[in-house]
Image 1 (cartoon, rainbow, N blue to C red):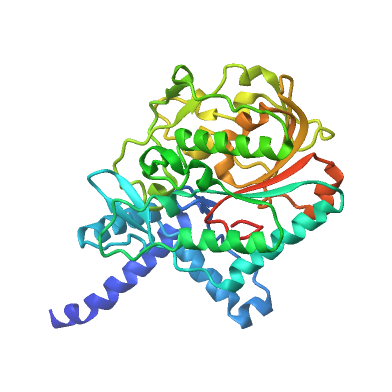
Image 2: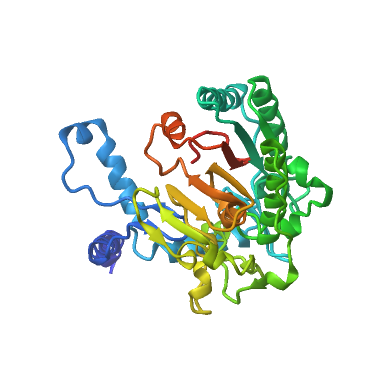
Length: 393
């Protein structure tokens, strides 16, 4: 009996290691984590000698085992449940959850360094000056982000978020650099409502928040263009929501453990489906796409399908060109954007003869010469106020 007890622990350990290795080998590797919205490490079976001796390969192996661990999502989901059970404030060191309301609140952001903010302001200055060489007006817009303005409900001991202060400091630096800029919150703050303007479980604004941002954007753009462009009014008759369950970006990081009532909603003119010619890329490229394939793909999905923000509005295109047959202004506008703009890109496009939308995360171009060659009437950079780099992450 003692011999059995003596060998039981190493035999059990060996069985666990060997069994885990067999299961790991038989499991098909995943390229992407749907929950974490990131690529997963894949096996590097032919490492170079440099990778081996530098230690880079051992780190790849460690990441590979972690990313491709059998039933990883189940383990991670259970880990989130465990964190909640022991009362941890920041789940996965990122978010606080209010179970009563279903709101997810991000961990407070620290104050950004002067150097980081100055670097972004300097990049904007270079962009503005490069466009000015061709007499192309440029305006930088910061859009109010959920993480900055939706801070409640949260524990009363949670530190104060520095997002608003970071944004205000940035705009002062941008102004000092001679760059035209708009803090869109200042144009929206009269009736600003975090509860109406942001999803509970996602980092984006809702359709109602996006629409208010669109109205403020068009108002300030029309002033700069010297044209009387009126935004399309928000009409309750045009508003409708999908019954689908929503996969909020923050809830996905928490493995969909937060119950909520978030819904994907729309408010768009019926003419949007017919008035645009949409090019995936440039007009010269000739690759066109129908409106319903670009915007609101979730409308065509089964009611049982769980949809995310990209399904609901638009995925991120490196370049999208929208030609409008029913415009208020014959101007060609270029918008450099992040995903916040996706919900309103066709609302903005409805006012101009041509709208080019660029996403620098995916566009492999030298941006200043490329913009100069487009010869637009105006360039707008519209980032949510948590994006503090010209090349957003």
